[in-house]
Every structure is written in structure tokens, then in C-alpha cells.
Length: 129
Image 1 (cartoon, rainbow, N blue to C red):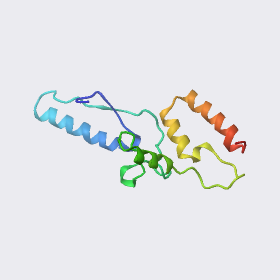
Image 2: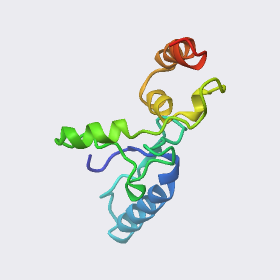
Image 3: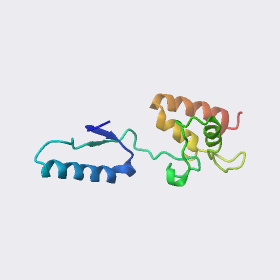
Image 4: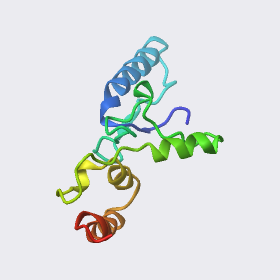
């Protein structure tokens, strides 16, 4: 946690990493010492994680899923408020339009995600539920 070599960040947080690197270099130079590592960004996945309202997940949008909150009612309410889509029955639906599949894609391996998509296409998008 302290003095990391790599920091996992989203693409939209890269500017914060640039500032961090600048400050670390400045302190190291001013003190003529190697106090701080110059951290590199680690982008786990390139996708933007969608929030419960299908916009970019952000605390400022209040569309996060509080996984580490001990209030199970709040967690449940957040999960059940995830927007899926507003298409009518019978209209074609696509996996990239659903926050639920976007979240699963972010948290799973490619193989797990592809298996889920096949199951969902069969059961839901093809109207066979």
C-alpha cells in the first residue's frame, strides 16, 4: 500500500497518477534521496465500469454499489436499482447495453463472461425465459 511500484487505476484516473509521479519525483529531487517510488499505472481492464444508472460509476453520481458497507439493506437496494434497459418486449437487446453484464465482464474472466453471455442470450435476449 505504501510506496507501491504499480497502482491499479482506471483510465479516467491517469491524470491523478501523473500528479503523483510529479510530486514523488519533486520530493526525491529536493531531498536528494530516493524516498518515494515513482509508481506506474496498472490498468486491469480498459472498460469503463458502469454504475447503477448506466453512467460511469462514480461516488459523485451516487451510482455505486457499496460492497464493503455492512448495511445489507443499502447493498440490496443498490443492486436492485441497477438499470438494465428500457426496450420493449420483443425488441432486440444487446449485452453491451446492460450495466449488469458490464459489471460481470469487469469482474470475471473472458471465459466466464462468454459462458454467461451464451446463457443470457438463450434465456433472455432470444425471448425464451
